[in-house]
Image (cartoon, rainbow, N blue to C red):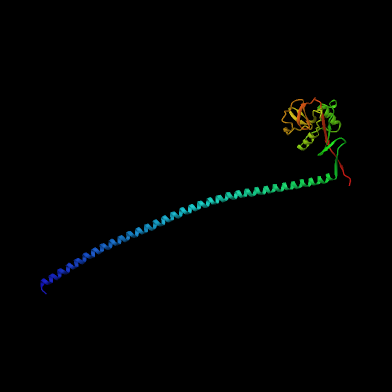
Length: 261
């Protein structure tokens, strides 16, 4: 081989070696770049995972906090309901106790009524001759002629001598009886019958000192000094001067006589 050929081959080998060196440097750079990219992507992946975990933890914390708050509210609500139920149960027990007491009282009243009925069946009421029996009282209706009629005070004195008083009306049934027996004669000689109701200090009071509770019975007539009340059949009670002369109605309790078997 000639020297020229040797030189050319040597030069060609160096060129190839130089080219391979250049290629190796590029590959090294490419590899470093690839490594950097992989490293960066790895960091990004780790950051993404950490961010995801952080978001998940944040969401779970919020959910746990919300659930805890809801549980606390439910617990408070349950406590209130429990308190209300306890109060209602206590009220029901109290109502039941009151009802039992009322039932017991009612049973006692029923027994008392039955005993009274049994006793009443073994006796009968008795009124003096000329007196009228109604409910548990005896009534004497004094329908005197005008010359024998009396003032309110005189009528009361006559009732006292007979062991009675001018009548005291206690209920609607008795009022109907008194009104019905306040006989009205056809000649108009009877203007009314004294009953035991008169003015005392601007109030209508009965013989026993009690107030007239039903003002409708006297048609809302105001109590005036020196006024007393009369009853007459088919007419409202009337306020007249106590010095007027009228008939009168006495009342006393009926006597009870035991029936013979």
